[in-house]
Length: 149
Image (cartoon, rainbow, N blue to C red):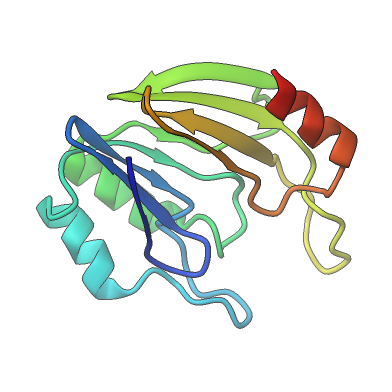
């Protein structure tokens, strides 16, 4: 798995059998950088390989842009996973060569942010595994439970 940082929180995970985007299709948001247009174009034209999934940890604009995500999903045929209030506490699924586990953890407390469904991801390609916590509340006990599992 190769990991490329494409914007302030956006990752492109590439594998010979597919590409997974995590918090990568975002918008500008109060001092945070949006995904640059050139990177978005690279995703659309296949320069990163075949996109097998688009994930967002939550719906804040610095992690997720609904319009850009929809356009990219329509162009590539990639499924999209963005948690909402109905998303279960734990979800296990696959996107191409990636095993993806989602665990619901609340967003860190920010008084100027509306509440949203938020979670962390454990993503593995069979050889390497990453833990992406995004803006998760820093609950050490909960994070340790997930990582110990």
